[in-house]
Amino acid sequence: MSTVIVGGTVVTAEGTFSADVRIDGGVISAVGQGLAGPADTVIDATGRHVLPGGIDVHTHLSMPSFGTETCDDFSTGHLAAAMGGTTSHIDFCIQPHGASLRAALDIWHAKAAGRALIDYGFHVAVTDPRPEVIDEIMTLPGMGVTSIKLFLAYRGTLQVDDAALFSCLERARDAGVLTMVHAENGDAIEHLMAGALGRGETAPKYHALTRPPQLESEATGRAAAMAEVLGAPLYVVHVSCRGALDRVRDAQSRGAPVTAETCTHYLFFTKGDLDRPGFEGAKWVCSPPFREAADHEALWAALRDGTLSVVSTDHCPFRYDTQKVLGEGDFTKIPNGVPGIEERMMVLHHAGVNGGRLTLQQFVSLTATAPARRFGLGGVKGTVTAGSDADLVLWDLTREHTITAAGNHGAMDYSLYEGMQVRGMPVTTLVRGEVVVDGGRLVAAPGRGRFLQRRI
Ligand code: URP
Ligand code: ZN
Ligand code: ZN
View 1 (cartoon, rainbow, N blue to C red):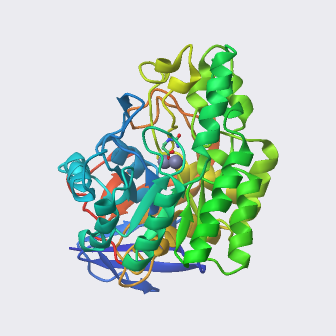
View 2: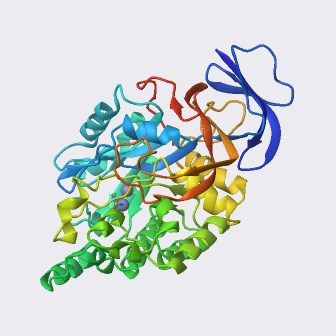
View 3: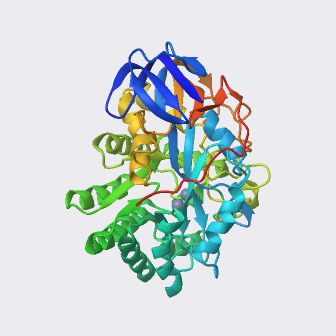
């Protein structure tokens, strides 16, 4: 099957230029002028920008957590992603205690089987770092998995100690695997949470107050120091505050192999959102928590200067009506996590590009090109170049859209961005050359998405 997209403006991380895009067998075969020769399908992109499809490297679909499970599965989550211009994602496969990493991956493969609309990969979260499990890290690249994650918070469920962090960093380095870290000091947080509950402080806002930014900065610096000592690549997930940014920047300035992301919502919300009337604030409960407006500006600056190279979502959706309410009367029981897979590209484009904070090229780099390169998909995904998969989004810079939960496509009953008006949105999404969403309609069948065998 051949397709040619004619008359559009192509955007890559390096430049913006008028060009047609020819696709053969799901792969971009040419980008240039005058390609409008015979093709099975011709797509007119006049007035549109042709962007690489978004790559979201931080999602939690169908993830058991807080006694419940995230409400988007690989079907609803993928529909929402594709509607928002995202064509690939990497989900966190969580190792159940007692299980091998291989068994954990089998569980996650089964979750995706038959449902996937877009392409997907897995990171493995090592939660039970027994010696044989640490040894197993060496086998992950052979299974197409080139990144692991360690949680330094959530004591009793996901958290690992410093000895495990050090050993895993070392073993992952030797295996060519990237170590990702959730950097908050879980032990200190447990202490603060117990104190708050003891004083009868049970409302959602205490979630933020018991996870202060200093405890994220400390854990970030600790992990970065270990990575630097070992020469082991480290990727800090969901950086939320200025102090953590400073630790990342310091490590980078010494040449340590440390990279980092922030997530869309940390650019928009503050801890004040957790203090909304009634129990509404529970919708804004995630970890790390939202900070201050000054942190937003620090994060935007870090996106521009390269300290942060990726914007992901940490899409971890729990409905308000049946799931967030589990924490009424005890903020420590509110499922941690917020949605954003559908909104990421639109709100980042609007606040970033329209807001004069990012160029269109930076937007493409942060949402597609850099995530692909960092996570073993360079040359395959994340750009508009001959030889890359034809994962493309036709973006209309002028189209306006009001974000609402009702207008979104996942399983959620709220959006953090409810009522936000954006200018610029995806109108057509292609995955490996096939149009999956067109004009807000799903036009492909679930089950077509493929597992991404990533390379080291
Ligand atoms: O609150 C969050 N972020 N939940 C998802 C799990 C994690 O920490 O990434
Ligand atoms: Zn996390
Ligand atoms: Zn997460």
